[in-house]
Image 1 (cartoon, rainbow, N blue to C red):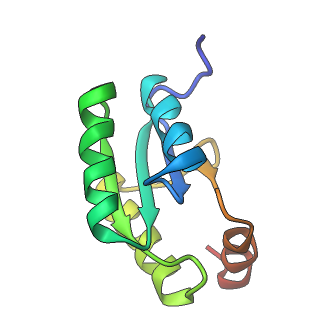
Image 2 (cartoon, one colour):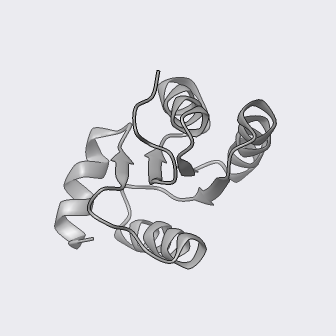
Length: 108
């Protein structure tokens, strides 16, 4: 199925396990450039390696706790540094409801 994600940037919170991991995998398989974040850096790094191996996609792991404003800023800074830009057509998949409130509060 072509979801039109090829070349787009996707940010997936909670991307190291469960639904977040599955979301990141699906997006990478569709050709999106995917940043995943989670709090546990060791689990996150392994998930990123597994996703790269499984999909051949570009996966960027960023350790972040999306309940912390500084970590949200760090996440977006890392994504912008790696992918150089985020545009309206790019994707953000938040796997935690707190993320939406925090992103809105920070204004990123």
